[in-house]
Image (cartoon, rainbow, N blue to C red; front, side, top):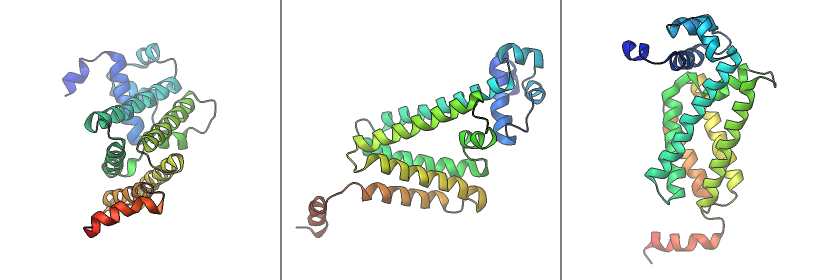
Amino acid sequence: MESETAALPPRERILRAADDLFYRQGIRAVGVEAIAEAAGTNKMTLYRHFPSKDALVAEYLRRKAKRVEALWERLDTEHPGDPLGQLRAWVEYMAADVVARGNRGCAHANAAVELTEKEHPARRVIEAFKKAQRERLTRLCCDAGLSEPELLADELYLVLEGARVSVQSVGSDDLGARMVRIGQAIIASRAYSDVRDLRPLRRRASGD
């Protein structure tokens, strides 16, 4: 694995080292010297590819965002033409992701806490990422024919953010399963916005 990494171009090695160190140790705690050393290069080379640490942080977060964007494509591929199936699969995936990451949490959320300066270039990346995710989730809720799609998207995001906080404070025991149950219950509650919509379901359940 180390030999494979060493064969990569310097820019890619730098980004991989930054990805690991920023996520594990925090953005403020990691200096460019540590990143250059982990990448098997030097500060001069690092600054040749990234004019500043801030620029490197912004690119690190852009790459994280691209990985999340790939999830939406995966959901669409696995559940073609089925927005409700995609939405339910999103809940299950995010629950598994929260547990897998444990107390490290979301890279963008962590960065937002550390980078409070509004003019920091990474702030724009974080804000654009959060907005894009909320819009994708809202659109999926709308395409699934669920009532109040914007509010539903907000509620699902609150469940996700709450789970991320919970896993850092009390651990992940049964958290993923609970997150899935809550998320699916919220989705189901919006599937039938009118009492009349429940009648066919009740007839099927009673065998009429």
